[in-house]
Structures are given as C-alpha cells and as structure tokens.
Image (cartoon, rainbow, N blue to C red):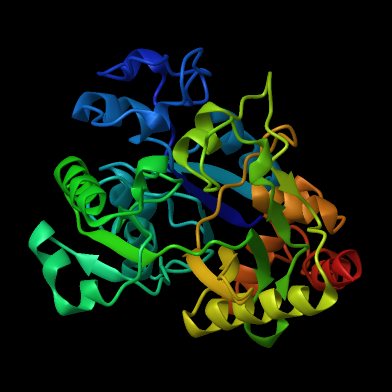
Length: 376
C-alpha cells in the first residue's frame, strides 16, 4: 500500500495564544469573533501584541481541515501525519513515505513555505505542489527613505502597501490604501515596524477582482470556474479589498458574507482573458499540481495578476468561503476528489505508482473536462 506523508501546520488552540486581541477572542478554528463596534480595519496603530493575536497563525490549518485532507488521502493509501515543526526532518527520514502531500505553510523566515519541499528534496522524497512564488508589478521598499526614490515617484496615487512575505491577507487592512504621500509614509512605517520585512508598494487597481483555481500540469493545466468577488456585501464604509477583516472577522459561519460568485458572471471574452493571464502566470512561475491565482482589473478592464498562491486554502466546509474548493464544487468536483486529484497529479509527474491503492484513473483526468464544461 502506498505510504502518504501529510505535511501540515496546525493552528494552536485559543489557550495557547499569548496575546488575545482587544476586539475579540480566537475561536477553535483560530479566527476572530465578529466585533460589535466599528470595523477593526478602521483603527490605526494596532500594537504588536494585537497583530500577533489577529493574524500570526492565519495561514495554518485547523484540526478540521487537516482531518478532512487525511480522510481524502486515506482512499489512496496509508496516511501518516508529519507536522512541520522542528522534528519534521527526522520524522520524515524515519518514515520515508512514497510521497508527501504538502499543505504546510511554515513559520520562521521569508522562505518558510519552501521548507517542507526543500527537506523532501534533500531526502529524495516526492512531494505535491510547487515552491512558493509571488507575482506582483510593484516596488519593494525596505525603509521609508526608499519611498523618496525616483522609482517610487513614478508610481501614481492611490497606492496600496502590504507586507512582502505574508499570505492569508495578513497585514492587509483598509489603511493600506494610501491616497496621499503622508498616509503612504505613515502606513509603510507601521508595516515595516510590525512585520519586520520589506513592504510592497503598488498602484491600486480599481477594477473587479477574481480568484482562479488551477489544477494540473503543463499544457494540461486547467482553470476551474472563476470566482468573482462582490465587495458590495462588505460592511458600510469598508473599501473594496479582500482584507484580513473581510476574510476572518466579518465573514463568520453564523453570519456569512455573500462575497463570492462562482462561476463569475462575466463575458466570455473577459473569462478567456482572465484564464489566459492565469495560466501564463501558473506556467511561467513553474507552479505544479494546483494553485490559486488572484487577478484584478485595471481602470481599462485589463486583468492583472495580484498574487500566485501555490499553497491555497482548502477548507472542507462549503459554508466557509474557501475559494479553491468552491471552484471545484462548481466544476462538479467534490472535496475528497479534489484532494485526491492533486496527489494524483503530483504522483504522475514524479513517477510515483499509486496503483497499489487506486490507479490514476477518471478522477485526475476528468477534472479538466469538468472544469471546461462548468465554465463554458
């Protein structure tokens, strides 16, 4: 039987968190309770302790997600959990699985998402997915003085600033949209001080935003039904951005935001343009097996790549706004089949034989056809 290693990072329990946020407490899934007062993104100058409690573990997976992934993979072989902590290299070497299904985001350092893939390569163990990449047409600044450079002066206001090495909307609030230079400097200082990393400064794209799930490899890679974002459902006064608050605070299971539309109601011409940009980014950056790519239109309606996420969120509950599973469901692909397809693509790419458990059959091969029919 195929031995499958599941590499992951699990969100800590609420009692393990050192610094509770003033606007709420963490729930079992590591998210924040919905505030009763003004949107947190309107507040300026969160303390470091508040920031840690708000979003430090936002990228990690809940026990529910980890269990759902394990259940899906168990149909393809025997699954052994390999939490990506300091003991991971030793346990990986001792276990030596046939292939590793990687959803570990890592913790320390700017290259943390690459730790598990790098360790797997060191031991010669096949693994799913890509090395982490981000694509953005922007300026990277490491100090406020950099904003005075000639390059910065060529960028047209309004400008959007965000931490360079984060995911899951960590560090993204309404305050990141800067309409004047004074605000730009103040918010850049805040991000540099609290996130201890360079800051991206990019021209704000005023058009509609979409997120695109991709399955497969090479010329066979396929875009699943496109997810469109409806920012009109955000609280009154909130800016049209998918911020940390929009993702984890305002959108709660007991009072969900109807923020996503899948398939997005767009023209065939725009759909083709978004899919072309998405697949170009997926291929040129060497993404593999699966990814989620965020796209936003400029003032002329031209799609621009905001971010390439090679480790996309995969929450199993349809009530959660997890975009890749949402796109898969719109293509007729259930959650377990989605997880299995991703491992099958990875196994086929690396010559790993899953035939001892389940051959590479209709699941992975039918996904592109399902996607095409659902988005047509």
